[in-house]
Image (cartoon, rainbow, N blue to C red; front, side):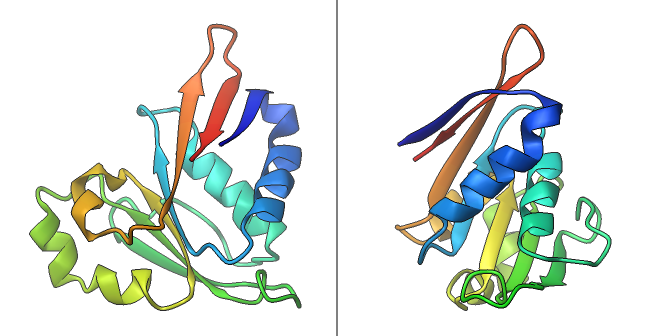
Length: 143
């Protein structure tokens, strides 16, 4: 497990850069955290580190946003799918959207509110837990 113990907003890009360096061959990333913990903000910073030039925002209503990686290495040139399952009532809704096809596509998948689709995630999905510290900073645990 990797920890980024105290991440203030000013350190977000550095934390995103560190995260990107850990991606390796992993493709599916499940982001856990309470409302307002910074899941979308962190995913946006990660996408920017991967060279995405599109407008990056939460797919709360669209459920899935797609971005083209803008880099020239094996990680940053991959397609990126950003999911937000907050509004889904059950995993069958996600299954009906064909999320498993995305998860096994080899593209990078960043998932907010993954609890609803836990059973659909690949066994090797990487889980990122974001905790809000008393001083407003964030602690990240990557498992």
